[in-house]
Length: 405
Ligand code: SF4
Image (cartoon, rainbow, N blue to C red; front, side, top):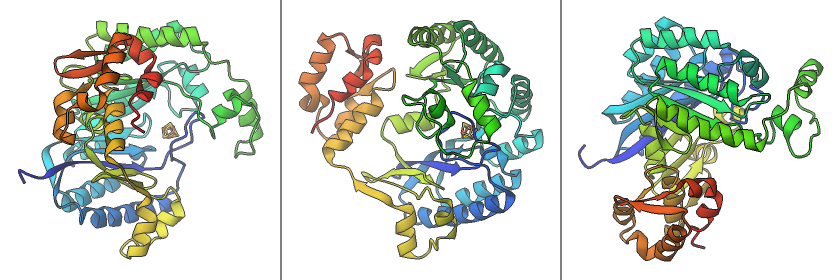
């Protein structure tokens, strides 16, 4: 047990009550029959994948989606039992489940907790009901408050709230209002991302570079509403929102530990930190990605292919669960270690680098580190190389400097 390697698990539950207008995640509404088929196959996948993970100890689990809380509590309990029966899970493992307001009852939350889930991540996005409507969310702020209260009543002492800034029609004041209302509740963790208009979403039809309504599944009424949405905040306002997030959350006792993630001391998300520091991870469920033994691969994103595959047969297993399999070169692993580590405010550990690669970070990146430091984009503090504020602003440029080929 002592020498087992660390492994993180990500479990994908692709079902949502309704698709949000900005969402490009692999998620969709699914009826009870689809959910049943999916959960059965997921159980089968967990048992089969775990068989080749005996040298690992699971240090964190993230049940994400989609909306995992849309499943029945018994589905989640069964999932947890399968995981416990298949993997060696550390007693200290952080086990997070995503939940959306309006989809969770108090009894279910108590069941989740009894099953070992010890962290809940709530998707709020905005405290303004008009903005929630623009996003196509299914809940109001009031419904979020009720859900948040239930989460606390069920005994969860580690809660994240997801927020999005730069929503259509959003002003600096309304973003400030969202931050204030959320910090008053004192969640342990807040994720605050800027809206990105992703290709393939209704938002892309409305706000993308080439506005052209695609032949998607929107009704004419939905299209009319989409085109009537207000403009996105301009770049300057978006910038101001970004800086406001940092100052307001710092004033309220939240430490920014990653570009878009804030927590009270000691409540950083262990699962995300593991990801950003190169811990191996196994993705289970539709479309989920894995990084094991220096190899990257992902599961099929095709629901029918996934649910009908005979995973106990080698051919189906490989076809369904080892897509785009690639072995990273040593250089690619170093690049990835830098890209991910620099997202953390503390930066990349010089000791961590030498432990992992058997050579010092300076022997690989010495001249680049010196040049970026001279340009005021990077600094060395207590054994870590980290981005300065200016470096974060120019992060695409900085990251490009760490490419080795
Ligand atoms: S709830 Fe989340 S995963 Fe589901 S459609 Fe909305 S943004 Fe996407």
